[in-house]
Length: 470
Image (tube, rainbow, N blue to C red):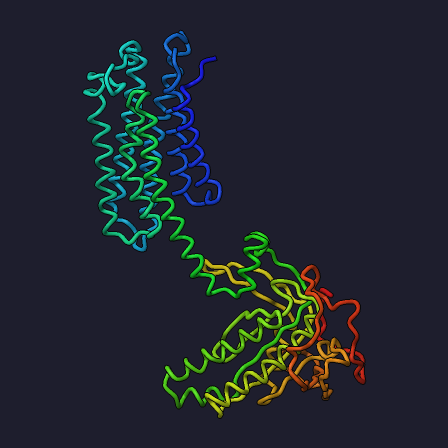
């Protein structure tokens, strides 16, 4: 068996590996698929060019040479297709003229490939004749085929130049620039003698990898920027469990806390937008820090209202007690803040515990992490009923408290709440802050109340909204 030269084999493997590395993690993007196909086709073509004794294969020589020519054409076509796909990522669509230039370049490259195949079939001895100089291609072959290839590449170059007038994706533009600089070296590897191919191909690959590193740096910066729009817990879940795990929806028992400001509407009406925004920013900061101290996840900001999940996206043991500790901590920190920046504002808090469906949903071309279920609605209604400085909870949350928690529970008569068919028992909670409560080691493998947790018995058995799924 005849093996290719070691230098060609190593460089070809590097080229193919680079194409595979780009393809595997981003294979859903057409631009990435085209780029990977281009690099793998070049690698296979270079590998075939390193075989000696092809002319001695008798009947297999034509098939061997035809395969090499097809790979050569495929590499050029895929490279042009990648440029066209990058153009499609622009903020504004490219002009029809630019797209026609790309297509024209591809058509000419197809003509170049089929003409060389026909020439190899019609005059195999002349087709396989190689020049003794730097190029494998003889002067006759250059005269016959070079004009078509040069015209096709020129049309593509003009199309790429026109992309400067289109706002394409910055990261893809970096890779496109790198491929434009590396392109001459990569194309030369298809036509130069085998002794020069490792050098030219390595130079082209290094130039392209330089652009790829810049591309990855830009994508990493974008990821860091976008993480600011996610709660830290959702970001950690994506990092620890992966995107597929984050997208899964599941039913889970958790606790929900909703808080909002009292008197905010009239306050905002009489203040400048800058002043209102400054107060909200400080308020959000206080709420976010309190949530982090008690394993809570800030799910939504809606004006002066904030929704916090305790037990999602990461399961948390003792989620109901943690939600109460969070509420007491938030009440103290929030009142201190408001007393200093806006004494006319107040803070009300509602807590509810129960089954909810959590996970990501698709909508309007984006993903949203949601929690849907009775506790979300009930916590919002209890927050609406809570007066300034008041914490209202459902009975299930209050039942999870322990005697040593030092929380006073005032059980009130059931109240009719919007969206619930029957009056709901309401508990008013008060006491010291929960920062020093002992929750033991956080168990993220289960979301329910620990088996060892003791309940504070109230005057009646717990009643909470019916859940058709248990």
